[in-house]
Image (tube, rainbow, N blue to C red; front, side):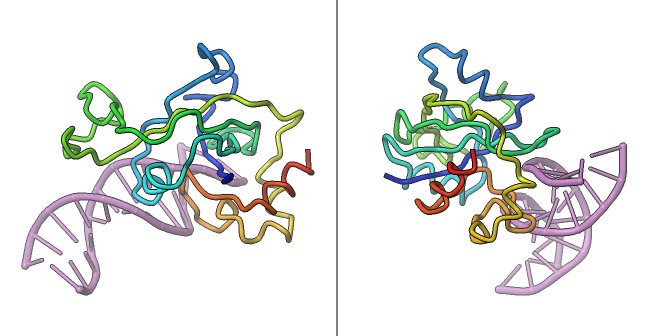
Length: 152
DNA sequence: GCCAACGTTGGC
DNA sequence: GCCAACGTTGGC
């Protein structure tokens, strides 16, 4: 099993929103970065665990866990001219962007904040805390995953 | 709201 | 292929 971290702005889509979705399922679409796209398309497998990270908010940090409920398929939002993430270049016959579906697993008893994660020497290799990192999807090693969970 | 970091675009 | 201009991300 692989481990990941995905960011979402809680004002746009929060972990509470995921909880309230039918079946607690949600298509994770709108990713428009090639590095992140490649991970979604090629590496994220059914059952993989994913940290839900709240970004661009008062208290950025990890708030919960989800799992991959469906492996990659073309991101339909790229073909919708009315969608915020519409991409005129993406050709339905040769899609440029991909989605996965995620399912809610749990909410952490507290937010494990970015501030706290930055202080841990064990996490210096974590992409999230590298300066200037803007990736919205990133891998987490099993060691990092266990370490972070133990902070809860 | 500011702004540093970074990815993308497009002229050359 | 270089690189300046521009747009976006996201912490603060």
